[in-house]
Image (cartoon, rainbow, N blue to C red; front, top):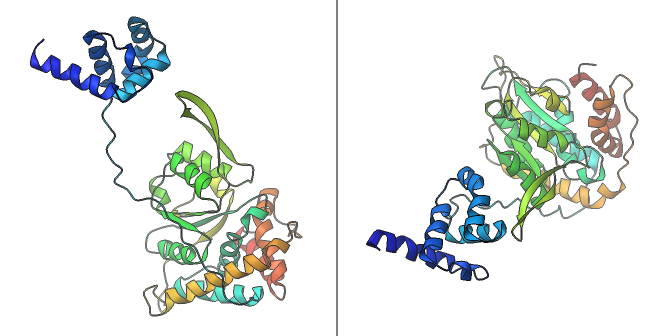
Length: 345
């Protein structure tokens, strides 16, 4: 046996030794070499060869899988960072919801030039992220514009400061989305630059569509004790999108539309870097946390709907109008007019 061959066999035996149960099956250097060969195959080639290879080695396919897995080099350590969502300490005293929504709408309008009714809808949408598990649907928020430099990313940044447990990303995979929701809920997904990755990703769109409804799930196979088993992942969570152009139809149909334009001559906004801007938004988030703790459990779930809205638009509006009704004062009428206007009714 030459040095290269001996090294290959020794390496295979060393790595396979970590697999305690089936390692004794390797009775010869030929077996060890075959396992080493299989461990080096691309996944698709191994899948094609595994049944015949198991027959040649005289073992079950599941045992062969364990041997090959043990012989494969250890995976490179992940270079990304784990996800830790922001937690907010509730405000130290009870809050009046109507006044809080007024403050939120004004704060949002200081940072972005908005179309009529948008500040009202945005305040309600941010509030609903703190109580969305009470409802059957969680409306998507579609922040879009016909071109760049209209304030989409800025608005998403303001929204991030106000919502419950935000997770912002400029790109996400389908598996990333449903695993985040399954493991980190309650969570609010904020997806920027969606025009660059969403339209051509059918699987991701399916995940985000299903998460509009409380019962939304996806099913995937996952290895459990050496066997691939079907498992279910929840997808129900608030999602906001920011991008150029319209969302794919199925997502647009589940969204509150906020269409931004570039600032006109003489229009000004306050930058997020302005002194005290972030601190003020953090205070508003703390007040939302206190409201959700105190009054969230008493929210109604069947508010009266504007008759001009279609069935899907009514599903979208339920959480927002329930919050507006609890706020009282001008908010019930203001919310219904704002949402009807944004939907073009």
